Length: 209
Image (cartoon, rainbow, N blue to C red):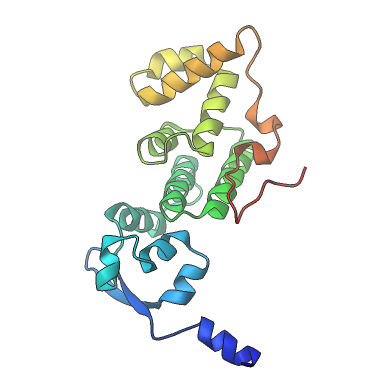
């Protein structure tokens, strides 16, 4: 019977590697397939033949992923509220492309906390990132839609003044959300349990009550 170290070595087979091309210059990085795919559904799919690049054992990170990483890590003023919100939204987009549900949930929690601390609502830049680049029907979309639906009465002048700047899908979502509430006010999303705006899968179960 094989010893535990021998079994562990068999699981971590270092012969199987693949190359990830990163950045506009497509700089190559060699990763061990077993390790890279252990916690990442994105790399697990890449290493198990679900991507056409798998046969060549070479993976070119999608331009959207490269662009997201580049924008997030450029030197920016972290104290600028509008940029911080956009950064959270961009990070959520990146997490969704990498299939990282834990990071998606953490971004939603941090985004909500940022708005509460600074007593602000979602900015136009954040809305455009969430609706134009983020996944449709995401929990972050639901959160910003619920926030505006809850505050729509006090923001009627703001909606009228800036209606041409809002993403059209966002305005449609807010209208549907308000109409479904009928004569009742849409609940403040910050009063709901954090799990209400979390994604869940086999690795990320529902939050404890």
